[in-house]
Amino acid sequence: MQRESAHFLVADTLPALAEKMNALTCSHDIDPAVLQTSVDAFDAHFAPGRDPAADLQVQRILHARQWGPDRLRTCVPAPLQQRGAGPFIAIHTQLITRKSLGGLRTDLHSRVLDATDAPIPGLYCVGEAAGFGGGGACGKRSLEGTFLPGCILTARAAARAIASGY
Ligand SMILES: Cc1cc2nc3c(=O)[nH]c(=O)nc-3n(C[C@H](O)[C@H](O)[C@H](O)COP(=O)(O)OP(=O)(O)OC[C@H]3O[C@@H](n4cnc5c(N)ncnc54)[C@H](O)[C@@H]3O)c2cc1C
Image 1: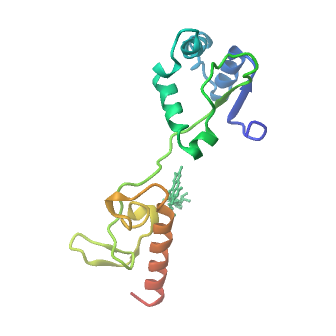
Image 2 (image 1 turned 135 degrees about the vertical axis):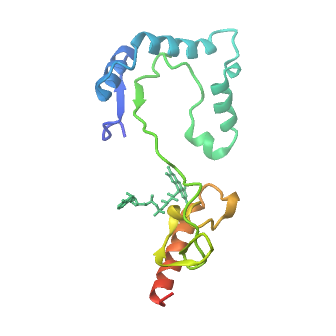
């Protein structure tokens, strides 16, 4: 990602990182002094005599690391400015809508229903547009990682209904 993504910014110093972040967004949003203060504040948790776990973020990372898969993908918390820890990396993120918690009401043939629960002729709806990754296939208690099957299920139901002239 560091090599190939324009959204991964890498620098050896915090001022250089701030400069790259501002250049990417054509702004002055990142004040290098504030960035330095924030990083110093984080690193201060690791000063002799301090308990790093007193910091909520560190505490949560340590908690996550008690579970095998999270242990693999999280680093042991350490000072960001520790010798040899560099370079600094900033990742440009954007807000997205991850899940639609509602959608058009459908029946088991993926036909869209009107206010009286009657199918609207010729109108089908599948996947996230039908809500909860497919017409509420998982109900209110849908779990992370279970949305794509609902999308496929409702798409197949719609295709079958269309093919058989529903
Ligand atoms: C970060 C993230 C992680 C996820 N992880 C998982 C996971 O691990 N397991 C899992 O099961 N589910 C996961 N999901 C949910 C799953 O990805 C979605 O439920 C699924 O992709 C929805 O598929 P869809 O075809 O209904 O909608 P989308 O994939 O949103 O497709 C809709 C398409 O319509 C296009 N479109 C929109 N408007 C128009 C228009 N006016 N004209 C033409 N095209 C248009 C869009 O560009 C898009 O390509 C995740 C979702 C996100 C965002």
